[in-house]
Length: 256
Ligand SMILES: [Zn+2]
Image 1 (cartoon, rainbow, N blue to C red):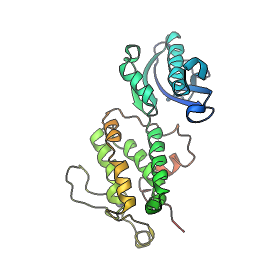
Image 2 (image 1 turned 90 degrees about the vertical axis):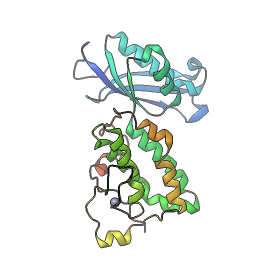
Image 3 (image 1 turned 180 degrees about the vertical axis):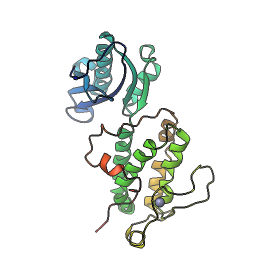
Image 4 (image 1 turned 90 degrees about the horizontal axis):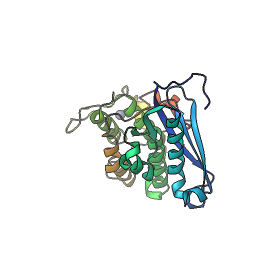
């Protein structure tokens, strides 16, 4: 354990978990799973797992996390919240296995934002969807902003997140239907912005592709968790926090 602040048995920990493998997918032989205290940013524990211990490479992350939890709890510390990415086996383990029911498992919004931008990048590689490319960073930031400003209100989070579909099509005020919002949160755009931004046309391939991602059922279900966690300082993406502080940053990077 590496810590300047001594943790005591009374501390209820809020941890972020992340697994790193030596290579992606099925060929990985080693995985390091680490748990970080989200309050102090200190590394609380880590576990190095070999594929031979886990049976196959896809099980290494889960085993790494199990080892870490065991190690932390055997030291008398209590885990209150654990934030991880959307790893299917880990989500299932935390939901179903009795020994983990006392831990509040949440999806880390940064991991989620990263997985969404990866999906959009893949889509934008298709010729007919390349108009999506300049929007990806703003969309990722929009998810962060939606989560950071929803005060734990999952309905508001969803309304804010889905409002990106209006914004990208150059609609910034609308008649509220099922949503609590009626306009974007940014300042009115100046003429130059309106002219230069590569807006997406409703019904066009990039717009429809984005709509599928934004309204993805699994994603919207995840945001139903009222305690959907935001941690705005643990990202490992250099383009993240500083850009995202400005909620008006919903515009694409300029395209040459
Ligand atoms: Zn807007």
